[in-house]
Image (cartoon, rainbow, N blue to C red; front, side, top):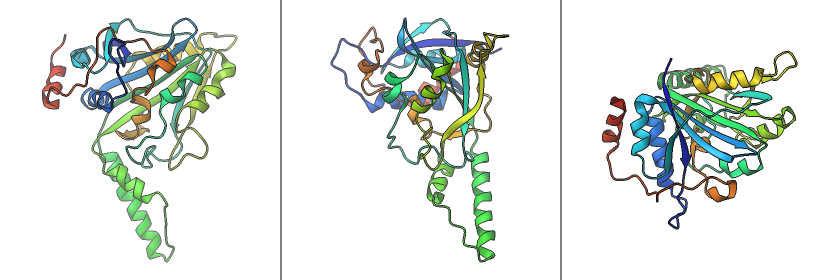
Length: 285
């Protein structure tokens, strides 16, 4: 079984007058591009409030430790008891993007202060571009056949589909959440970005739900525990680097959701070349 290292993430320090900086998000995306198995998890509990964690293979621990734009403290694996555990999936084919450009209008932290007690997570592993490109070719062939039959095929999202097929980074993805009270399942689902009915061209919908039962009160917690300990296996949800932005960006106002401050001042990580950064993953700590 893969050995993982867990980090508690504190995006900003209190010792300097820090403001939101997109370079912090760039560093997060750099981690996603260079670490083939990565997970972001947000917990909200009555005792600890809101906490953000990052899980990476121990072989890539040095990559996280090299980042200076946010606080990352090595910690023990974290888990909570849940009454309900839900996996999400894409409503349409993964050819249709969740995010059509880099201008993300919603992100998980902007709404997390209103979330019930529970956990939200996204697991990512590197995916080849071939599945996306192949589906896009099939899409174009199907369109051409319909046009030949004098049935003009118009897909209002064709431009967005093309944009996603031309992205350079893709990820197999698992998105999930759990709640500590079964009755909060719907409320938690509704605050997650890209789950609303009107969202286009694609949105997240419920794939499978596991709930605590009288015969097995730990049923949901067992599934959550296994999910936190394993690599992403979601081959049917392929997201681009744009698609994952709402779920891996830092909060604009971390104080509003009660995240702890980093122990030392943080700054943008622009002092090294990404090729050098990638080399850090080749050695174990």
